[in-house]
Length: 421
Image (cartoon, one colour):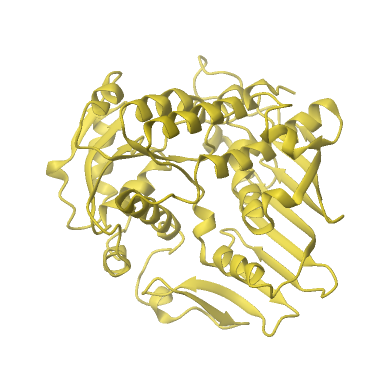
């Protein structure tokens, strides 16, 4: 499906990119997520796409035509397709960075190969499906002296950035309570789109695949070291999920989970995560939210909405209804009940959340490569988010409280693939 991306070109040109030219290959560029990275990089100053990689040449040619910004020169992009495409691409010495959007189950094998080829990697979440696999990837890139980054683009949403700033500046107070809600309606159209969707052994579950973004947002705002332990319940509520091909695995993945995260200060954060609700077409929508309350001051933050773009802060100096990126890439705030400037509503621009956060993270990663500077959302940071996922499953299976530090240090826990209910 052709997307209207032309209006992004001016914005991205003003925002800029890495400080010097970085040559990039896109792995899995024609997929349901990979096209966003392709589109963002195609309009990024000083980012040069030299290759795209995937199984199907026709799909790669189509996505180069439809999912790149106007003015992008497709003729100089090398297409690596088929079973040997990945390993052939690795021999291209021109490539400095690979941005990957492949299924979770192949992250470790492909990541190690990329490190051994001497290239930097920015990969879609989760980093891997087990803590040992995370350690393998972290060690591989450390040995190669190359950057490893993980795409958690919601950290780059203006609302999340604004909340982080409030907390860091000490204007919010100590976090004492909170709640995470993830309700993503998934019907037949979703389950039959990809073979691995809804398959636990391939990381297609509601926790590691669907809810990990909001779990990561919690870590970003609250800090990993402040979470002591996890107690959780997991279940499969919808056991009639369809498959498109009889050869596919059955859709056996966890689709619902509830968790209690105990904080070191005696507070707690609860979580409700599900893909089994709001799944009928006439009612289907995505509901995602994070709310946090400080102890003593009663300051309250709520971030929610279908795209987590509704932002409310209560009991501080003012109430903000929405935060957004302006044309210069700065985070701006709107008083309650006001609407964003005409830039977004009346000039025909597409949804800013479609690409802006991907663009921000990719631009920072490429700039870190160009400047030889550590990228903050690295393998260790992504390992923390996966530790939450593993702790949830380990608690649910064993029906006991799990110390988060024990999971991170690989003292307890298994692979996401092994937690079959």
